[in-house]
Length: 250
Image 1: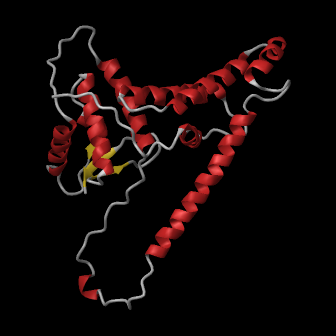
Image 2 (image 1 turned 90 degrees about the vertical axis):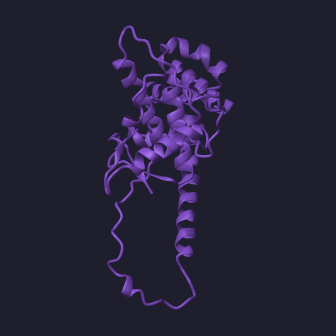
Image 3 (image 1 turned 60 degrees about the horizontal axis):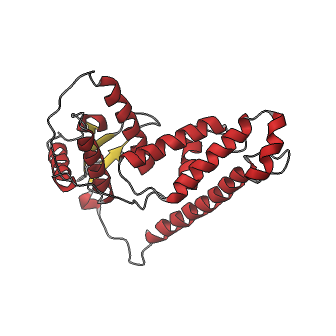
């Protein structure tokens, strides 16, 4: 039976993290941010999170309002800018993007520092005091694994967003769908069963896991995939930015 879930994922580190992801993904100049494009993409991701019934923190909505305010300020004629300067908290003549830019640059510095520290931690974790063992007898016993491109929750959200658009375009004008109620745990088992039937080195396209038009089935399937990712039960691969996402069993 389908039950409404309110899910909060640790992978979402806050609105600045989402903005930085969008800036990197769409190769936006952080020193000259196109507010219309960035605001549109940000709102699409927030909408996708709401469609998935995720617990969207108020800070995401506050940032959405801030982006809209900055976008509106930049669209105003010059003579009207002075009237809004005090209300929005900007000095006359100041670029309304300045504060956002400073916050993003500072956040990026902390994020890069955290990544460097994580890399050093992993590097140190590879060091052992025990003398090396002779493993020559095992050489060639294992196949070389396919290189897995790091796929983040944001990449999965982007794929989900593309899926919603495709389903909407393919939906007939009049249709009748029998409702199929299913729990996240049951759908996780079904997905693992599907992937276990694949041949060695065979992968399944992310979009092929959504054969039904029913919105509840789509949401449950996506949440089941996120939970399997969290459990490290499946392999998620994407060869290039914006390319298809493929899945296989560990």
